Image (cartoon, rainbow, N blue to C red; front, side):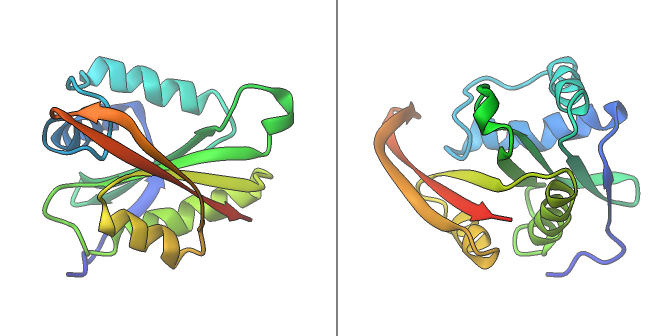
Length: 167
């Protein structure tokens, strides 16, 4: 399912409410995120502001003024030697899976990361999540770690894999 007339642009604080709506669907219905309580738009505004205070990108995909997905990067670790390493994430509005939105967001995100000098890109995937595994593999990520039963949500233990791409 191709989403036509979709554009990708840098996030603005005005996007926070729609981003929270997209994200909270996954908070409440899946183990894709380990957050267990919905995130208020004000909290999402704060999170966006924190990324905007860095050179790292936060992008949104939109169609007809509606956010269809988002992707961003944040520091992998705080220590100075990690300054060229980032962790990335992408979320697509429910119902738009397999639309290509996630791929388009990641392609633009990785180009923006390369432009700011990022070197290592890391993505965490809570299992099971076949769509996310396929997306990371599509972009050339390699599996570098598998942590067993490190998350607990919806009354069950969850494994997490980590994937790495060198730009």
